[in-house]
Image (cartoon, rainbow, N blue to C red; front, side, top):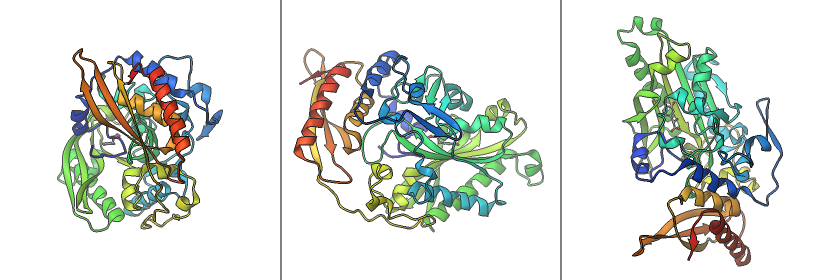
Length: 422
Ligand code: DAH
C-alpha cells in the first residue's frame, strides 16, 4: 500500500477507499481479543514522565477495563520521545523544519511544542477535528484506547483545538503517535508526526485583493513548497486534491524523488467550524501534518522503520545534530528467517490483532507479516496462511530462538485470536 503522511495513513480518502473493504468488527470483541496479548516477559517500567505529567502503567495499560487495548509493548514506547533527541534522525529532521519556519517567518513566531502527553481524550483526537462518528480510524482495530473516552493520539491534529482555545495562532506540534496496523518495513505501531498551523485575521487579507481562503491556500502552498525544497533540494513537486475531515480544500504534496512520486504531507484550509468552536471566529487558517519517519527514511536512506528505535551505536553514531544529508550506511544485513502459520479464521479475526500479538511475542525481530495464501472451504470457513519474517537489525538469530518464538506465537494465536490452527 502506498504510504501517506506517516507510516500508517488513515485520514485521506484514498486510504479510506482501500480500507472500507475491510469488514467492520464488533468493538468489544476486538478490544478483548487484543488486550489479552499484553502478557509478556520483557521488564516494563512503572511510570513515565512527559512534559511534567506522570503516566503510570496502571493508568495506561488497564487490565480491568474491557475498553482498553494498549499492550505493554506499546506502553513501553511512551516517553521515549525520539523526536527530542538532537542526534537522532527524527530530532535532526524536526530541528531542520523548526529552522525553516524561524527563517521564513520572524524567529519564534511559530510556537513549538514537542512534549505534550500522547494520552488524549476521544474528543480531542476525533470530535474536535470533525472526524465523523463512523470513521474507520475510531475503531478499536485501528486506535489504542486507554478507556472509552481516552486514546493514545493517532495524529498530532489531536492538539489543534486546545491550542486554538489557548489563543495560539502560529504553532508546530511534534509528537509520537500510535496506530494499530500491519508489520512491515514502513509500519510500526508508534511513529512521529508534526502538525503546523497558522491563523490569519481579516486585516491580513483585506488589502491583498484575495479572500481569506485564497490567501491561506496561497501562503500554505508557498510555505510547504519552500519546506520541501529545504529538505529535498530542487525537486519537481505537484499538488493533489484530497479529503481530510479537518480541512477544506485539502491537498497532498508530492515530490518526484528517485523516479517516483512520493507523498510528503497532507494539508488544507481549516474547516470554519473548528475555528469557530475554539474561540477564533472570523479568522481563516491553514494546517498541515507530516510523518517524520516517512520523510526521514527517504532523507537519510533508512531502509527499515525499526531502525529508528535501535540503540545499537552502529546506527546511532552515524547521525549528528544539524546533519540532514547523512546517508545511512547499513552495517550489515543479517539473514531473515521465514515461518508460516495457517489457521481457520472467524469473523472476529483481524490482521491488526495478529500483528500486535506477533509484535508482543517477538518484539522488534518481527520484520514482516504477510498473507501468502487464503481459501474458503465447502463449509464456508476461510483459511489464512501468513508468512512471518524474523530478522534482527543487530545480530544473527539462531534457529533455536526463532523456533521458540514461533511456537509461542502459535500458542498465543490459538489462545487469543479465536482461530483454529491448521
Ligand atoms: N492528521 C492527518 C493524518 O494523520 C494529517 C493531516 C492532514 C494534518 C491534513 C493536517 C491536515 O493538519 O490539514 O493523516
